[in-house]
Length: 412
Ligand SMILES: [Ca+2]
Ligand SMILES: [Ca+2]
Ligand SMILES: [Ca+2]
Ligand SMILES: [Ca+2]
Image (tube, rainbow, N blue to C red):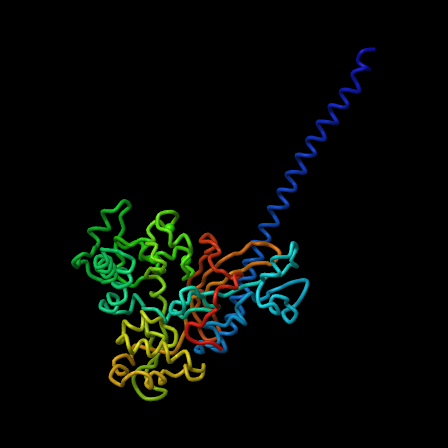
């Protein structure tokens, strides 16, 4: 019987096919599981960063106007442990070792989720950054500053970037902001913008975000962020090699030429009592007061002579949190005439903060990077702005101990 002889080969072929189907199925299951695990890690890293935000908010509730509590506090904000099944904060090996270096060299580090709160150190050494946050009041407020103040800040910055049309860029910004439709020399109003494809109208009013500047004639990301395309305040290799890599416009001068964004804000405001004596008068919202304890030199120089600005930066580094709370400390540092000129423009209060937090795990090399602008309203924190910066790259050398954790102004 011939068909009997066929049974064995047929069965073998069927078994072979089944095995192939099975192997294919297992492959897909494994890929799915791996994919799900990455998704889970991404979510965990985000939650680790959000834990950092919550911890920060509890600190701000207690010490909103004390920069020594949040300006640069590596003990608190560097590699802070959120959760590990292997140890708690007291027994955290990273805390004991001072860095993650040794932990990451292990082939299988214990699971541990962490965050770091990081910020550029604008007046510090070139290769330094901070573990802390930045008050928006330390920046020049685009919605409150005078035309002259905006010019005084932006023209030198744009000049350093090698932009020959600096005056036009500033004129276009001022036209964008002013209420009229009269084109100033080098500026642009609705006649220009409505002819674009697609056309739009100039704001002719207050800006809502800094990115809105990208709608202004001539303004690009290169103007906003300069050579610092990954926005860490550090000169990365690709930011100092000219057209060999993105950004193609960096000038290879071994110095980081920042864009205008780190020095500008649209957020700073604080409630102030006006008129009458104590307990009288109305509370008004005052926009654009400059925080004298944290403003970088370039911003201070907009409202006072360069020597006075330098004296303030030097003096504030030595003061305690208690001393920094009262604007009177400035009187002892600059001459009375200058003080009278600036006293209505400065503050020691901080209500809106730029916050950047990295969330990551020791056991997975994944890092997520987020930024927030938060505003403290009493004990409540309101998120005014939020963005996922992960696509810009890790940027911060959080595991590189050769980087100086240096103090810009104040240290606890
Ligand atoms: Ca206008
Ligand atoms: Ca950089
Ligand atoms: Ca480059
Ligand atoms: Ca440069």
